Amino acid sequence: MPSPSVLLLVLATAAKLSDPTAALPSPAPFQPHVEDAMLTPVPPAQRQVESWDEALALVRERSTDLRTAEANVQRAEGRWRQSLATLLPNVRASVGTGLDVLNPESPILVLGTGATGVAQGRQQDGTGPTVPLVTGAVSLSQSLVDFGAWRGLSSARASETSAVANLQDVRRRLTLGLARVLVATVAAERVAEINRVGLHQALERAALTQRTFELGASTQLDVVRVNQDVAQARGALVSGDEQLRRARETLGLSLGFDHALGVRPAFNLQGLVEMTRKVCAPLGNVSERPDLVAARSQVEAARDSRRQASAGYLPTLGLSSSLYGFTTEPGPGRLATWNIVAVLSVPLWEGGLRGGLVSERQGLEQQAAESLERTRRDVLVEVERARRSVEVAEGLVKTAAEARALAERSDQLTRRSFEVGRGSSLELVQSGAILRQAELTLALREFELVQARLDAFLTEARCDW
Image 1 (cartoon, rainbow, N blue to C red):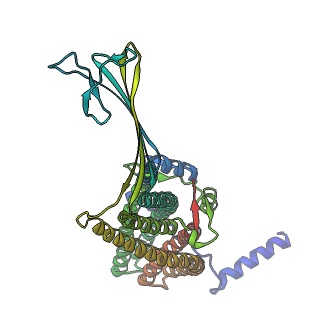
Image 2: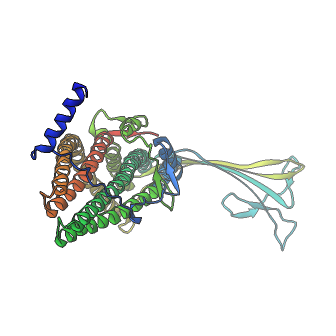
C-alpha cells in the first residue's frame, strides 16, 4: 500500500490536471543570436597614450606653438639688450697698415676712420715711423643725455614682459587644449562602443520580430519597421566611427605627430583635474591671468615706443674719445694723438619723418589699448561661463541618468510585451531608439562634466611647466 505522502502527491497532481485555470510554466524567452561584420570595433591607433604625464611630456617636446612662444621670448630679450647697448659705453679697437705705391719710402698713417695721411719723420729722440707703418686706434663713445634711448629701453622691457606672459598663456592654453582633446577622444571611444551596443540590440529586435513573423504573430510591416531601425543604428555607428578617427587625428596633431594617436582604455579620465593641478596653480585674481598681463604689457610697450618717437625732438649729448698710435724704429712705437670730444646734437628738420613716426606709434598704442579691452571682456565672460558650466553639467548628468534608467525600463517592458503579443513593432522600435539616444546622452553628459571642471580650473590658472 502506498505511503500517505505518495497519495497526497498523486492527488495534488490530479487536481492540477483537472483544473483548466491552473497556471502553466511560461516558456523561456527567445534569445536571438546575431552576428554582423559592423559589430567589430575600430582597430586601435598605431600609438596610444597611457597617462597624462606622457601626453604632457609629448607636448613639451613637440609642440610648435610652445617653441614659437619661447622664440618670441628670446627675440624680446634680444631687443631689450639692443636697446640697452645704446646707453652703455661703446669701445672699438682697430689695427691697419698702408703702403704708398708711388712713394714706397713714405710711411702711411691709417686713421681709425679709414682716412690716411703721411706720418712725421724722425723725432728728436731718434725714433721714426716704420715702413710699412702699422697703426693702432682705440675709440670710446658714451651717451650722456638721450631721452629717446631710455624710452626705447622701457618699451623693450615691457615687450619682454609681454612675451613671457604670452608664453605662460600658451602653456595654459596647451594644457587646456590637451585636456579637451583627451576628453574628446575618450568620449569618441565610448560613443563608438555605445553605437555598437545599440546596433547589437537593434539586430536582436530584428531577429525577434522575424521570429514572431515566421510564427504568424506579426506582420511584414513589423519586419520593415525594425529593419529601418537597424539601418539607422548602422548609420549612427558609421558616423561615430568617423568621429573617433578624427578625434584620434586631432590628438595626434595636438601631441606633435602627423598620424592618429589613441588613448589606453585604462586612462584615468576622472582624475584629470587633479593631474592638471600638479602643473598649474590657481590665480588669486582674474586680472593676473597671463593673457591679460601680456595685453597690458603690450599697451605699456606701445606707449613707451610712442614716447621714444616724441623724444626724437629733444637734443642729445654724447662723449667720445680716441687714442691713436703707430710703430716706430727703434720700436715698439709711440702714441700719436689722444682726443676727447663732447657732441651736442640738436634735431632741426627731418622732412616730417619724426612726426610721421609719432603718428604711427600713436595708432599702435590705440590698437593695443583696444586689444586689451577686448581681451578683458572676453576673459570676464569666459570665467563666468566656466564657473556656471560646472553646475549646469552636474544637473544635466543627473537628468540624463534618470532618463536613461527610464528608457532602459521602458525598453525591457516593451520588448517583453512584444514577445507575448501585446505590443506593436512601432513601440518596440521607438523604445529601442529612445534607449540608444539616452545611452549616448548620458555618456556625453558625463564627459561634458569632466570638461566643465577642467575649464573652470584652467580658465583661472597659471601654468609654469
